[in-house]
Length: 206
Ligand SMILES: C[S@@+](CC[C@H](N)C(=O)[O-])C[C@H]1O[C@@H](n2cnc3c(N)ncnc32)[C@H](O)[C@@H]1O
Image 1 (cartoon, rainbow, N blue to C red):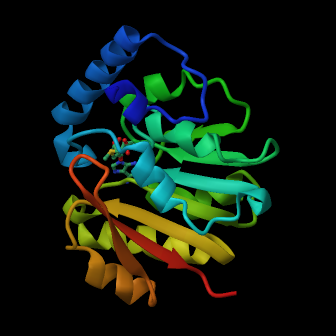
Image 2 (cartoon, rainbow, N blue to C red):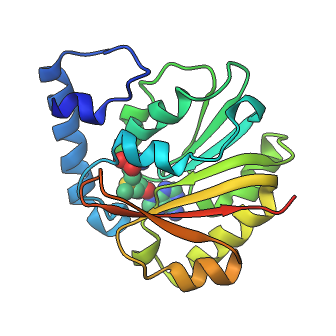
């Protein structure tokens, strides 16, 4: 039941429930051990990810970025929405979590072992002009303000007109900063997450 709750419906079950629990337990230990950079209690649910992706026209998406992919749990959920020809740039700074992320064998996935703050540079290196959608799981409320400001500024700069930036948070501490950099951004509440989460949404003007 819990495995169903956390696994994207659109993906075939790759493991048994027991194996899934083992993988999850290993990831949880890594998340908890690195709580200062993960800010994580439990993996984000499918409900929250789908809520973050509301308003995104996936048929038009060619380049998508995920900030803070963790063990790849949310990465798989995002991939399940993407067209066959799209690319997903998955930014993750934690080496242990990246080992699980690297088990995803999907040609659309490009793992970036660097911080989200390097987005602009990474896009230049990858020869990608801009990004259609950014889904961010990084714990912005516990990261230094200048770092968060830089990530928001470069996200705003790199998004395509009409593109969406979404951010999950467990409090509203970063709301003023998000509004300052991305005027018109708004938060919604997703109860079907542990704990219930605030989701920030912003669409770049066309
Ligand atoms: C809350 S976890 C999210 C994991 C997974 N996406 C989920 O939602 O279940 C946040 C992740 O962000 C990563 N992270 C923290 N700061 C980062 C940064 N500046 N750039 C990229 N990833 C970062 C952490 O290592 C951690 O894996």
